[in-house]
Image (cartoon, rainbow, N blue to C red; front, side):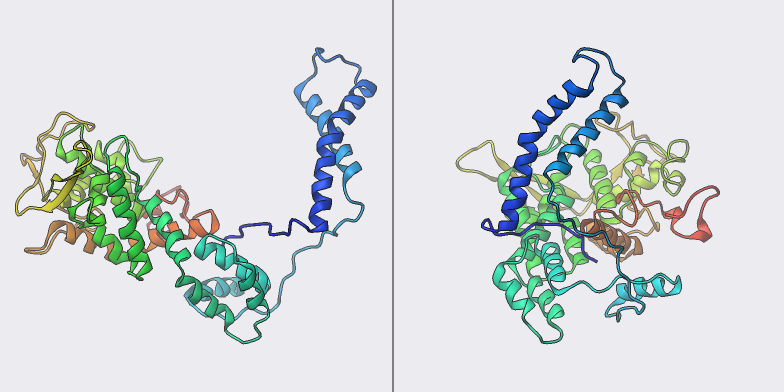
Length: 417
């Protein structure tokens, strides 16, 4: 399950490489002259005469083909169909069970196992983001003992390269940057957030635990990286409800793969029928329930940089009281007016209607409920699958339609996602 990233590794003294380089230099040098000569000999039109676009393209492609043929090596590699095997590899995990089981059920032959060199290149790129060094390659290829692939995976998972590569991936997912159009983490906050993510990955922290710690992160954002998840979503040019909405929308998209931003301003019905069958059944009040989990948290001024008094961190802390109130008519959202006579929205998880337990911290409750829902697992797998293969099983990866995952609930005329 590794993306096939093609990386050429060669010696600069390789005669084969020199021949290829010479061939390309020949193409660069010879092409203009041949094209100009051909133009003079075969084209009845001058350089300013009109020709249809397809005529020009056809003539150009033909001449480029002639040039390529003239400088190409005379020895060619034969084109062969891909090979297949009649037996299926032994399954060693649940993913193998799914893939090989489905292939066998549908009578689809399996491709052969990768060679040792192919395996090492792919697994090293996917786990660490780098190609293996020559010494590792030589040692691995000459190792005759069984189980060496499993041992290599364990070795790579314990490297600094693994921590670096997947820290960057997760940092991109949660948009860890020092500044954005809506807020500023500053370099201090960005670096602290990065270190928090890297330490979590390096230490083998479970993914669901990492997400829960971010959703409930608190403390000074220059000292506690988990608090920067909140800081990154602050909306300074509107009421505090805009920030709550950002946190609800971002967490639903990045950790559930469900794009709830639209229903933060209007109901799904009448807007999302052609976009998301599930969300068309949701209302703005449903979205507010998700945002209300963040309503008992405040951001206060924290540490001031002694070298620059304009750089001030934010201290994220939970408070005992507070609600998501429907009393706004400014900022980036349409007005929030009382609903059925009530100006308060209580925290309610969008997918299940579940709320916090008695005396439970609201943000901790949100993290617990979100990471326990099956959609959290689906979205996580899909995001990582896309990182490995370049294409998610559901695309776009942040647009799961929960009404299209089960044939039993599939809307009329809709396709299974």
